[in-house]
Image 1: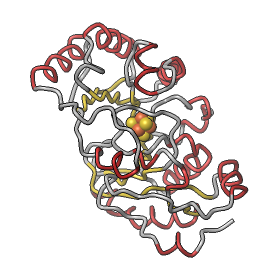
Image 2 (image 1 turned 90 degrees about the vertical axis):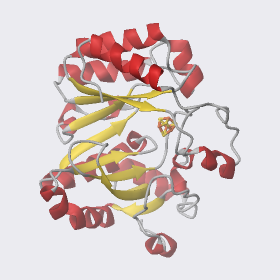
Image 3 (image 1 turned 180 degrees about the vertical axis):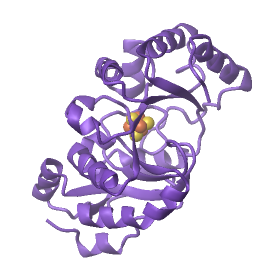
Length: 281
Ligand code: SF4
């Protein structure tokens, strides 16, 4: 199993995850994709970006993996849904890429964040990448929707210093309408992380009329505060920066007329989390 020539020629670095990338792993035989998923010796990567100050402590390198089982109505990166849109990257190439950033990350007290897509669609690759990062002293963070958290053993979770948990909404029916999937496994993963005392930053994308329900947010806030391991909440106002991707991919986008939340709504939601005793950014 190896990268094909085309993959070797594609730069792993992008200026931002908003670069549209498609079909870069399309030529990988299906049997190789299956082997990659079992062994983790090859991953499918949208890109590596550098310089993020919002995806974990310090300055981060973010590996954006492809593949996601959710279909969030507000997704900013629908080109990451399909795993073979990503560049096939051997673990060795990914480790070499990581080694390039090692010194800078130490100086800037940052680390590696693995995001997506949903990284745990490629759980074996993620575990191997985090193991490699820890071996060279790099802080690790996993940005996940939590649905596949059960794929990681407690021992594997020890390779992860911080989990950025994207909680989409509380209400089961609303969660299903928003993402296409149920919320129960996400909440179970959150409870398990709490039992393990794993530091969590909660991420909450705020979309007017979709995720701004007062009662829903109160439930999320009291649930999160009760866990005892949520260090902060990032309220992320919806924006339209990914809208062009839906158009170019030819996927029906239901939020083309949706506006970012007003300052009043953002302030109200932040206040709800604060009132529950959480730190909010
Ligand atoms: S979980 Fe993330 S990548 Fe997946 S559809 Fe939702 S927003 Fe997009």
